[in-house]
Amino acid sequence: KFALMTTLAALAGCAANPLNPNAARVEIMTTQKEVKKCVYAGDVLGAQGNRFTGTFTSNENLLLGARNAIKNDAARLGANAVLIQQQQYSQHELSGGTANATLIGKAYKCGE
Image: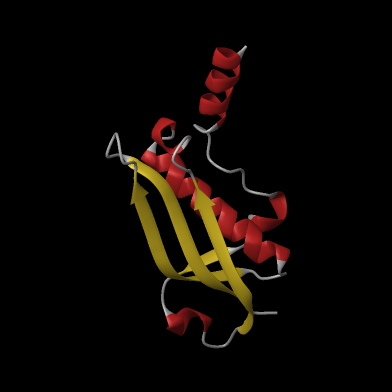
């Protein structure tokens, strides 16, 4: 039973965090100029992976999952834009591969 549960947990870690339907309209911004005329809605964070599942998750899914998670967080605040301020990636201590991707940003309501 333990082996089956471990396998299922590892496989679940392989998929990227899903993007909620209401977050599909959230745009990722990379410069302060892009949100100059927008209204600040709050700080947001998106992360994918940990020391257990990160090893079994592709780098692509770690990054996509973190992006989807930050967009979901912004949509929860009613925002339609995220200015990415920081990106963090941690390495797995045994495999040396990426174990976690984290995006930190500020959510904005733009063009409304």
